[in-house]
Length: 214
Image 1 (cartoon, rainbow, N blue to C red):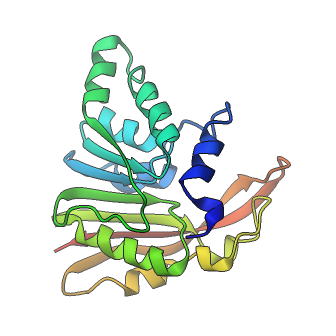
Image 2 (image 1 turned 90 degrees about the vertical axis):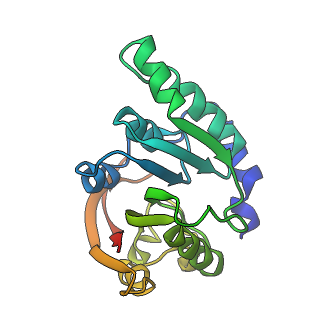
C-alpha cells in the first residue's frame, strides 16, 4: 500500500478537527440494502461510522473496521448519541463492534456475515484484489456482498490525482465472483452529481456491485 494512505495518514486526517465526511450513510448502501432483513454485517473502511450507525439503527449487528484508530474513536462516540433518546442510542452503540485493521494484511472470518459492505475502499490493485476476495469469502450462504467505489473513469476528479490503479470497474469485480457461488444482481457504472474541492458541481461515476451468495 502507498505510504501516503497508511494508518498514520488516516489518523492525521481524522484528527485534524473537522469531520471528514458528511455524517450521512452512503446513499448506495441505503438503496441497495433497505429491503434486506437485519442480520450480521461487516462494514469495511467505516470511517466516522455513518454506515455502521445507520445499519445498527435498523437492527443489524455490525462489525465496523477501519485503518484509523482515530476514526474509530470518533465513530464510537457518535454512535453513543445517534438515537432519538438515550435508550435508542445505547441500543445502537451496543450493536456495533469497532475494530482497527490493516486491510492489506487482515482478512475477516469466512462465511460469517449476512452483509459485507465496502464503500469506496480504494487500494492498489494487488492488495485490493486480495481484500475483495477475502470479503467475498466472509459472506454467509444467502448473504449479500456490496462493493461500491469510484469508477476508474473518475480518478481525476475531486481535486486530486491518485494513481488510476487505485480504482476499478464494476465489471472487474463481478468477473472475479465464481458464478457457481454467486448470483450477481447489480454490476453497473452509476453516474451521480457531486461537488469538487472548489464547490463546483461535477459528474462522477461509481462502480456498484451487489451479489448474493448461493
